[in-house]
Image (cartoon, rainbow, N blue to C red):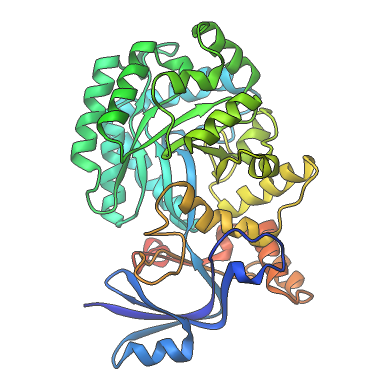
Length: 437
């Protein structure tokens, strides 16, 4: 039985922080300890108390003065798009046709998929992300590559083979039947293997025929414990095209309702331009609107109305995500920095405790994995990020004047990136330093 004792300033969340002074919403220890045994947290609290429980011969790692938080969670990212990030000048549909679909065609080559899966999960760990909900390409081999790499690292990740059978080049199309069959085989092979979770993944209504969405709905009925991930209402041209393709349905959201794709594990990327009816339907189904601020800004798609969605009578469940490659960074710190600006443009402010709740427990709740990750609670998986608010000269200078934890968190969010991530633990194993060697 392997055990380690981590020492540092520990912070985790119990619920949504209503205000910057809502101290009951989080648990903070200025000198905290985390006792990890066989990849799980078995004691947490003040270091002096946890150290007593550790016993003799337990390896101790002292991360003071750094912060120890649950590992970050990214609720929507496209792993095949690593070589698409930083592509100039297009809005969504042109961007897909010009850059994304040609790039994803390369994933017919299984070796290419294995290479990119390895590099993608390297970037996740480097930036402090320990769980990601990932889109693979249409090719079964791309999902096999992703899951094999994730399983090798013992990460808790959610992923699925994209289903798309129209309105894209031949090299990235499947059929309704092959999409169903490939997804079914991947579910049987990978869902629940180690820490792997499968997501049924119709890309979006434009690239799936009614027959394919019927198949996706059948998979959801056959496997009600699985996630479903797709895109919704990101761009005005996308919405108009969807209405042309499905004229008999009330709106874009009704497409997914009609085919049985809305539920408590349905992750709907973007959700920028929702009508009130659509927002009500998503709320009623318990589905999740995924906020992708860097992507929404970069592609000029629009501003996600985070605070209104949270506070409306029928509130929406919300997650946050990088979206790479439509996004501009692999870092969830950078994501919430841009998210802060989007929310400010809508006339609201997100306090730093709310941001870090979203990165950790908030996203874990949205992805229905909070019993396993997203907190520092006892008997959860020891996925932990170690943050250094003095990681760069500019951050060190600003820290000279910082007096509160809230100010420190806001500094990390505003100036932090992968350099602020000193270490990452995945199921109790040091993953960032191990990767560097």
